[in-house]
Each structure stands twice: as structure tokens, then as C-alpha cells.
Amino acid sequence: MVLKHKRLKILFLHGWHSVVGGVKPTFLIEQGNEVLNPKLDDDDWDVALATAEAAMHTLQPDVIVGSSRGGAIAMNLDSGSIPLVLLCPAWKRWGNVDQVKPNTLILHSRADDVIPFEDSEDLIRRSKLHSDTLIEVGADHRLADPNSLSVMHWACQLLGSGEPMIWLQEDSENAGAPDRHSGASQDDASYICDACGEEIVIPLDLSEGSLQRYVEDCPVCCRANIIYVQVDDDGQARVWAEPEQDYE
Ligand SMILES: [Zn+2]
Image (cartoon, rainbow, N blue to C red; front, side):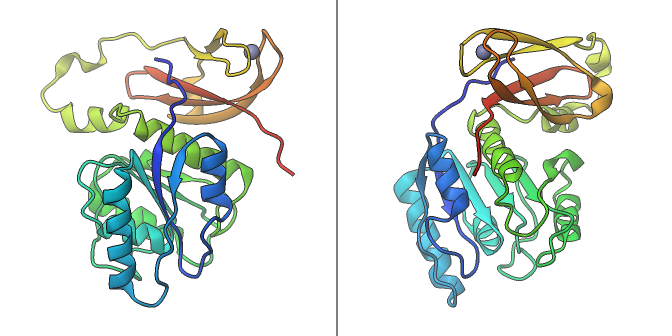
């Protein structure tokens, strides 16, 4: 399956004492998304939550992204089926929700010295979600480096596409389904090069894990693409590519 780059409506909830219009929401806008990035009160939790709730009803987002305290706010919103992308969510410090819904992805650095990586591991366990729901990325709490920004956008695209997460499907539906491993593993997959529009076939190395990210030059136009591969338990893959950008 090839995922097409989609323009998404994203509600971005910033962290405690973060500025509106920071690196992360700016990056999401630069990728062609419509982003609402409301100013959230740093001192009054209830006011911040109400602001986020109002913004959610105004925008009707495809995805909600919450960073740190904003991640806790995202968890405490009554957001129904809207998927969540949580960046090192500070759920132990703020709010009273200690689980997340299945269509959630969490990005966290193990080197985070503000919110421990273990908090996200704990969150996954409590929510009974697949361990791949938690993506280890970045080198600090900010997650503002090019790699983290890119993975954040990929997570938004993946969840915002409306496709159920492959591993979550498998986890929830595998009971009593003896045929589920009958399908042959894929040896290759394909993506559409953003620069030239050609469909590029790539070999799959399933030993590299279920969530892969690497850079390769398009064999047709030679532009560098960042390739994301998601492989399920049966070896079926989903590939998504975006052009590698120059970061100053
Ligand atoms: Zn190309």
C-alpha cells in the first residue's frame, strides 16, 4: 500500500511555557498542513483545557498533536475518534487521564531529562497498546531536531490517513483466527517519489524491525527521499516517502 501525502487539519497543543508558532507547528505548516496552534494558559489548567477544547470544535482536526503538557491536555480532551500524536506527554504531572486510545502514536527520547521515557512506556502498558506505539526518537525533551520533526509529520500522516494501524488491527483481532499467518511475507514494496512521481520498488528487510526509517536517492530522478516502512506481524508492509529537506 502506498500512502499519499495528505493535507491535514492539525490541532497543535504546545508545552508549558512554550511559545505559539514554535519550530514544531511551523514545520507542520511548512509540510502543507492547516495547523491551529492556540495559546494555552500556562498557569490555569482548566482554562488551558477549555481553550484547547474550543479550538478542537472550531477546527474539527484530522489529528491532534500535543507536546509535553500539551500532550496531557490532548489526553484529557474528549476528542472521540480523532487520533493523537503525543510528544513526550507529561500525563503524570497534569490531568487525570492515564490511558490513551488505540489510534495514538507517542514520540519520546530516551535522553529526555524533563519527562522520563519510562512514563511513556508506562502509558503504553496501561493502555494495553502495542510497544511500537511508542517511537523512540530525538535526543532531548524538545524533539525539534530534523529527524524528530520528520517522524512527527509521518505519524500525523499515518494516523490522519484514516487507515487503522496495522499492528493494532492484528492485536485486537488475532484471537481465534488460525489463518492469519497463511499469507506470504512481502519481499518488496513501493512508494511514490514526491519529486518525479515515479513508483519506486524497494526491497524489504524484515529483520530491521517493524518501523523503519532511512534515506535513499530516487533511482529515477536522484532526489533524496526519506523512506518510512511499517511492517506487520505477517510481513505485510506499508511504505511512505517524503522528500529529504535541507535544514539549516
Ligand atoms: Zn524521483
